[in-house]
Picture 1 (cartoon, helix red, strand yellow):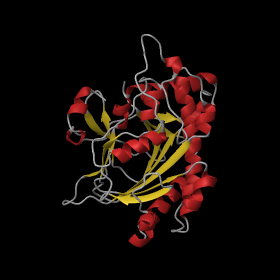
Picture 2: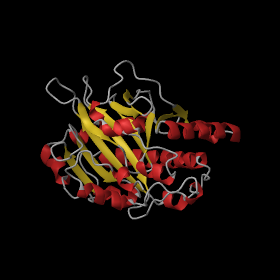
Picture 3: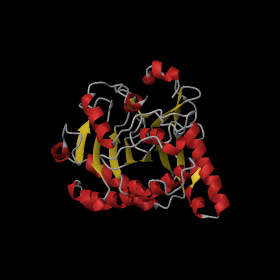
Length: 325
């Protein structure tokens, strides 16, 4: 992100209020074709990661019914009586399942959310809500499918960095997956238009499924908020803080926010992928030399949680800035 958008409050950056601008759309099925085709797709992904920090994927192999069922499970959960949802309320960010609302979360302007771990699924699903009855089955199927897509994308990103698709393979295979399941109310004239304040995600990448339009990203070249297009059967991909660290700044995290939709309530399911809790992420030594010294300190998912806990009242806290050398 440019210096300008660091000095101007991100809520006040101008918005692109015309039609959503086109964004890179990657056909993931082409990664499995011949080597020349795969190479072109890898290059397209690397270009998007370096220049923008986001893109969308189609032909990703997750059926529309699995995606629709995950959204339904989320919607049915948020329609439960408050006492059923508040069983999962906690101020401890390390709880395996945690429900909260904008009344407590400093970056949520108007949202309710349920966050829970999802990998290994057999370790975590026992902690997930049992109501609605469909939740574990439907969300579990989606979690497993979207993790497969994340690993496929990580291979392509690492290949695009010149590190090879099997780079740190064991750490990614054993890594964490956090599902952030969000519900944003329909906008009204008396409400704030922002559902979730500007922020970046901690992990290597985030894959986002949304029920309707409302996501915006900062365009680095113009410092304008851009509305993300809502393509049929597409998933949105964000580069996270730890990918910027691993790439030593070659790939950039993306600042994004959620706006309330004036026509309907909005469900979003963010699948955030990183290393295991205490596993440190460092700048890849293959991308460090005299001309490109390390730009970031090492850190882990656990360090990120500590950072959040220590800065709960600071709405403009930034984990990545705390890592810059």
